[in-house]
Picture 1 (cartoon, rainbow, N blue to C red):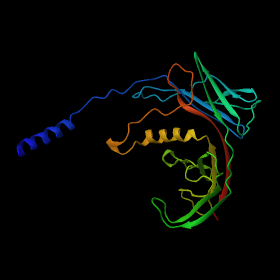
Picture 2: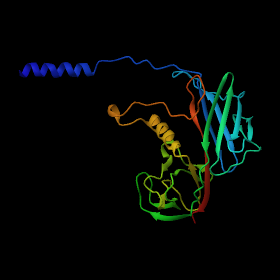
Picture 3: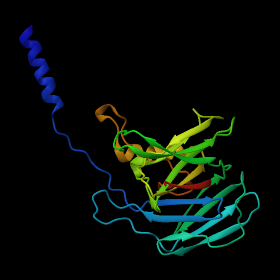
Picture 4: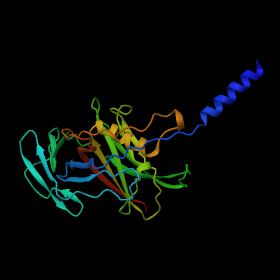
Length: 267
């Protein structure tokens, strides 16, 4: 019995180590669109196409698309103009109004796709303060900036925080700060920013109020970029997109957001 059990375990281990071949999809040419409209009356769209998984080339921007921003409630529309590597709105009839819904239509060759997003209410940063803090993780002892703000009660809100230190953006992909308000609804929020600062630095903090569904999109981007906990984690999945109407899959997202900015200088 003991020998048979040992043999079974050995066969099981050998079976676990058997190499397998995995076919990596070589899909290419699918549209990738990153676009937003904000309460500062600014609209930007970046449009490119996917390339094969093992290709050495990087995705190139598409310069010959037609990109139209529409305000659903008023019927007004503006065309975004190509500038350098993206499409921008320089002026027009569309206006940023809280609660209004905005639609982005994109025409590339025979492809016609669109996405819509509602402009959320702005939630301001009340104040920024700094405190001397002990060392924590990779951060040495020193000043830390804390953002203080009030989350509106009985609303579904979501936030993304961007931070500039002396005009240099600090949020790399693994340092994105975003969340919905399921655990902070109606509460006064103290957010210690996980970035190193020192005397003489100026820190600028932007609090973006984003649609709640964008949090899911960000979750998928981060999970796909960094994976999970080994073999027991779910496999990477396609990042959710709100673009519809295309015959092929479309990557990316269009959303409207409101934001508030404040700055602080460390003496």
